[in-house]
Length: 313
Image (cartoon, rainbow, N blue to C red; front, side, top):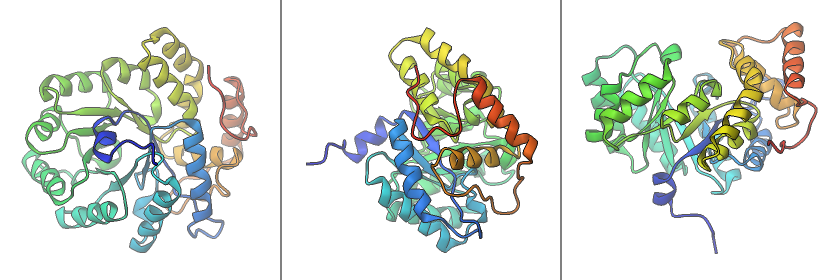
């Protein structure tokens, strides 16, 4: 008999570390579905609470529709309901977003995280998110990342979507994160749950302000898991100590433009994926950057040659 909680309970209790997974490619740029299987197993071994795929880190905008479907199917197949899989949605209008969300639902996703429309008024954004939420039975999560999407989603709109629009979660990535988290929670009146992001750079502060977890692509997810576990247990000093110890690596990996290359290189060196290829457009690393990454990993007491996950204090 399965020991998994019912779907509705798992979503209602969504919290912790949801890794934003990269999409692995082979040396010729084709999908590497075998590496998806090893990536899934690694994340679950690291103790993550869920997987988020086809986000900005997942290069979803570089995939064909057929490739997108293959990626969703493969992640869900290999996850085997051990943790929930959430799927990213980004479209130019309501019809495209609904189509992507319905496909994700049909393939077994437990939620979708949806990017906003480009530079659109709040009233239009509200109708957009509400329409997507009404079109599917799985939860819709707001993906708030103005540095990449060019669209700001204010706290008032987030809270209104929670109260009236049927959209009660947000992946919030707009600095200063602390003030926005507090404002959303104040206005939402218990209707909205907040996940942080931004590479984990502000993970400690996000938790302290009331976020329920993080959705980010840091390639040492076991570190974020341990920070969360300490904080959830009320051991705030230990959470801060773990965060402070590994902050140089968290900071270095979350670099604009080259961050995806750093993460894929880390996963490849750790034996999690076979290749660190990024599809164009995308910035690659130079040899100096690789040496900097190695030195930063070593400075916090870790190694890129270590196989499996670390036991983090």
